[in-house]
Image (cartoon, rainbow over all chains, first blue to last red):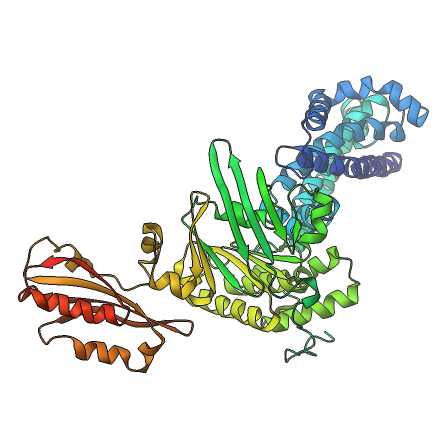
Length: 218
Length: 368
């Protein structure tokens, strides 16, 4: 591989990492509250409210129904509004985050639902309010699942960011298509795949270690 | 760890008696009147009235589905009745909002069948959680939580996670947590039902100790008569959402009025042995008598007197003297020959003269 291609590879790795991490953080910050609202407003939840629960459920399902490649194009006007351009790495973060937040909300929702209702009852019996229940029971008790779910979301985002190459976002996917595929640079293709394997394995390994440290359920 | 063993001896100041200013000593801690609660077509509580006296341990016993869980959850507002009054320290809590109930719940401790400890918090943080909710500072919370862990004998487990504890230890943590905010009332929801008999005894002893030392009023629900018998001062028997029998534990045990109570008591009171009960018939040469007697003199030789008064042809089948708290209670079964007919009458008359209840259960063909 030539030095030029090697520099391109390094740049692409950086772009992929930035896209994945930035959209991952945004989807976590947006998705976890959405998950909490879904669980709290559901039947028997700590803030039962069917209207909110239904409406939010529909919105989340709606976003999750749209294939990412279509969402990428459909969101171009919004991306322009937020970032000022629809091209490049920063522009790709908008559709990536908007696709990943509802996905992560559903993943985190599953973990929150698994919290033993007896623990919520114990917190209520102590005189705790809803916020106490969220802060002292729901989030800490579901934390291993919340982190495991975030790991899965990050890995999914690594894959999705490759598609964002379609709007000129750069990154490893873009490099593999333009150089590895269209210019028959097999070396680039192999290098990209190898880097992606290392990246995904690294994220999974870190996530698993963190979950093991957080999980005291025995 | 600093301060972990500072209070290795429970100190008098750390566990003061509940503030008497919260109510007159004879005012009931809890008073329910006409409380009803339905779930669909099922009446879980049916026009139920009950008072809990200050400082007592009240056992509420019933079969599953009798409404026990609904009843105890009504006492701290986790469950709302459809109608009726629930007074806690003289204040009706029915109709209060969730926000108004929260400060009241902080003064009511609760322990659970499945402990309900937070798996993500250490033991000391679990015990300190009610204090965090009540707004205590971090340092005060830890000091108080360690005092409580000392009280329940788990100081060395302060920084462990609940998953490292046995069932009995978990319930001790549950008790420490329930007491940390100095409640006047402790609710126990089948707290020993998930524990083995030996651990159950140690948890019950702890609850009794706490009741004596701290003056905390305890309401416990259970389906096990043994629990009520071991620590209850009074017992209320619940069936289909109503209290069908209520009284001092020794009194209800020695003279159960309802069939349900008799059946619930069958495991902890002497019963006519099954092989004899199956042979009872209207005719036969031997009369089988069941005798119940409660008298403080039983422990001082009265029982020996009773035995001395029996004719030589009488057979003592089963039973004896038991003690419920400090109250001796006798229950036993005899056979007496049917001929001469006066013999049974003589024995029964003597037993009734010492205030025993005598019941002719039937006859068997020959002495057992």
